[in-house]
Amino acid sequence: MFLSMRLINFLLILGAFVAAELPVTPPAIIWGVKLPKSRSIFEYVSPETLVEMLQPKEATPRMIIAYFANDLTSKDFSCLELDCFPFLRQVKPFNYYSQVHQPLAALKTFAELRNRTLIWDSATSLLQTTCVPHEIHIFNFTDGQLNKHDSFMKSISERLKDCPLVQIYTAHFEEFEAQQRRRNRDASKKNRQELMRTVEPTASQRPQEAKVLRNLMAVVSIQKIMFAEAIQRGQIMNFKRTQVEILDSSEAPLKLTLADASNILKGYVVEIATSMGPLAIDVLPVSGNWHIWRMHFYKQHFKARDLLFYGRKFSFCCHEMNLYSEQGSSLTFSMFYMDVEMDPNEFTPMDLDYVAKSCWLCQNFLTPSVTQILFAIVLLLIILGVGLSMLLSIGRPKKFPSSNEPELYVKGYAER
Image (cartoon, rainbow, N blue to C red):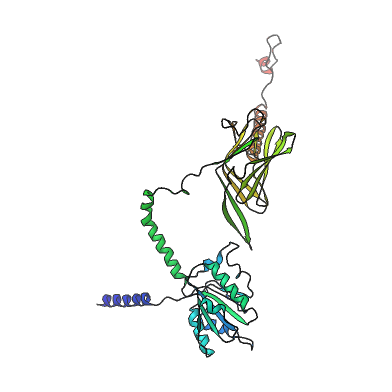
């Protein structure tokens, strides 16, 4: 009987927790007034606190406009693209709160304190609103296009720029609903995995074909170029990865410029047209070989950490090649091949039957560091061998007696 009563009490408590209404704590951006900063991203602003913060500290009352979006989350404000909220990035003073508890209820309470009612506006009526202090306007965004929200709020701010105005950008619902949708998507992935096995791969999933660019003196083949742009955000370094598209050779042919117009042996520059601008490869002669010195791309200079060189009687081949700039960005080439014809009078890479020279792979098994370590080890082994041989030779006779010489006198034999 006692156990059954404990079980009933536990079920009642569990039912109360399940039936309880979850708090509505969406993020909010407030500008037009200077407010205290949030001490932590986990600390939410209660309705009473929000009402207290919106109370004017000066005698001049302010007009309030609140914009409510659908399913707005904190992740929407952490985007790194330059075209993400261009207006909100510039507003001052800027106040961001990751969790605001029931912002609509707080506005209703604030309106009652002013003996006012909330004014629900449409887009047309809000664009025609004039500056009237004490009024509280509410506008609902019906779509999820955040850039359009930013442009609309910018137009309202420019129209009422001379008005004492406080604006709020928040949502009706909290982040929990967005997280719940992600959990549902994760659960549905298990059901889609078996369907994906039978579905044919799309164009992006198929192996990417290499792009071949030709010139009268050179031919270059590249499968893929990845550009990782370094973006400094305070003490944190973020990287924006972009796949660089190589333009068709018919629209932008491969260019090769000689350092000396009369002699190719003094170096050359190969220029490839891409969707993000030209990619220039500087090649210099070093000790009878070609040395890929550096690359120019996106107003940055990229260099490899290892020496990239190849013989003049070979073509340069590299399955995976990484180059880095002083700004922290990087370029990654997949399946990179380059062949330069020293004497294009007989054969040119434009010929259909042109055969490229043998490959000189960029994979160096003996890097400069490994070579120095091996040299030091061999030198230490030689010194160790010489020292051991000298120690073992101590006390050993170096000459043996000859038969023509008299026998050595030994005192022990004479006493016998």
